[in-house]
Image (cartoon, rainbow over all chains, first blue to last red; front, side, top):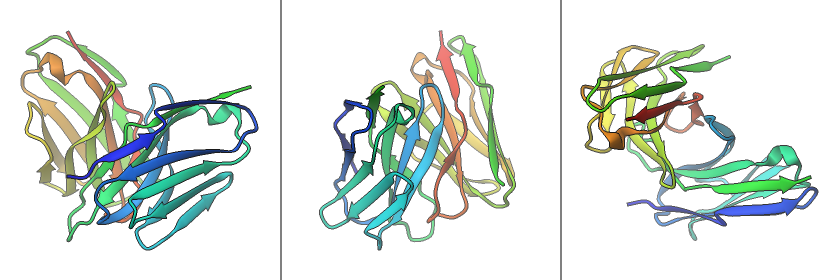
Length: 115
Length: 112
């Protein structure tokens, strides 16, 4: 059974710092990995999706990497801003022969950027 | 562009009462649809997913059921709610099994 772990569970840093959020998964047979952000009481917003054949994806100040063999992904946030404060979730989609299996989620990293 | 709608946003129901949460997607056809539950401290749990009308797969045995009466409509139901059914319920869609998941704003359910 796939398990996804996110470290740290919470992080508070001053504005402007570069930071790294970590995600690890136990079964390397994944289809893709997706990073989300969730604001309090809201749904999830997709940030980046990395296919199993890719090593990284970039969007603006965000960069996500994937090392499938070691079961790890990182989300790098450059020049953090108070608006980046949210919970960040990592999720992996298991390999599926033809179905539409959903994602296995980590419990998230609660990020606070101090002004 | 595609949009996903969930309602209601919040719901308070007594134990033993029925439940019906509705989710609709606009701007796409034949989406994959999902219901997740997010409980405090436990992360998101996949409840049901659907690849087409009338096709429902259940991930965990429980007090809930799902139906897809139309291509872009996904309904989560229960005949008799339990206290343990309280949580934040999220509907999501994706174009294919290999494309990003997009979530609705969720329904906060409190069973009293």
